[in-house]
Image (cartoon, rainbow, N blue to C red; front, top):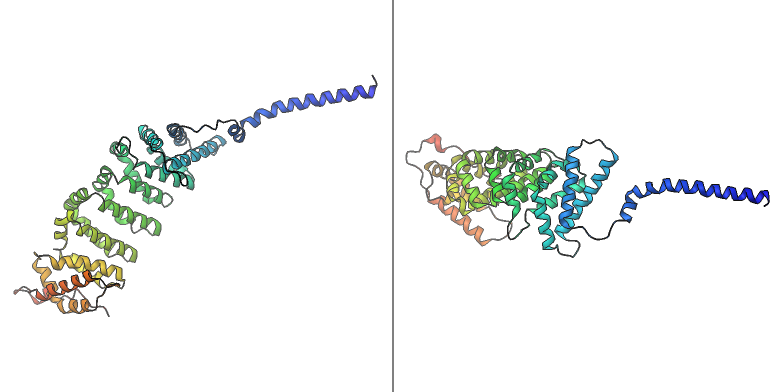
Length: 390
């Protein structure tokens, strides 16, 4: 064999040997990448309960590790994001497809069986923004999911009421406030959770949260507070009977007399809903028997914003309609009679409303028929509580 041909064959053999050796080293690295792992995965969809289990395992890993920024942690965070998003899609349905009842039930049972909700709340700060949004929607949805005609979320919360405390305090973190607020609103749909907030000192924090400088957070807190004070009638009525003195003192000073128009408007509307609810009849009578409360309402009638004026009128008329008015209320109305009549003569709703006109006429009639106390001292009736608008 010619020497040149022999050398060429040897070179080819050496090249193949080196290439084969490099390929053997390189292939395992490829197989370890996520893309190749996914390539060889089965296309068979996972059972909903299995997704919850994996989510819980990933949350436990995340909760037990510090933010060390290693590659393994990043991979697990990415998988956790995908799992939470998949749970959301199953619970809410995709595009036009409706969620499957059986799948939702599986998720709900597995989610509340092993404290996954607690882990998700604890790990929420470690998730990215989109994962936080998905997690909020998952927790919110699961509060409404029945299993065998029973809301097992209520049973879970009854045994884990400390989570309600964590959600309320979440308003103090501006980055997480809207997520915790969204979860909290859905949780207090359960009477046991609402009762927990109302019986704790945390309920007082809402008067501060509603005044936070962050508009979005303050508005969200106001929405949650309204849900808390209007959803469960008997629970709220019992709370107000026991706590009406401090509650309305805070309500008046921090909300109705706030310098923020939005705060006053929301508070005035909420006050009307609370007092006009039949469940709160005894509380309403006590409220409209207070001289200080009437002064606050008369000042709100002078608001430059029509919506506040209208809502203030619907509460003010309760003071006038009260058949057992205390004498000091009667004296104040008599002392301000001419100003009130003048004011109501020019007070109109934005839209023609026969009921509003009838209510206004009745209020004026009641005020004109009032008789002040015969032993009324000059100083007690001369205070000008109601100053007409210029």
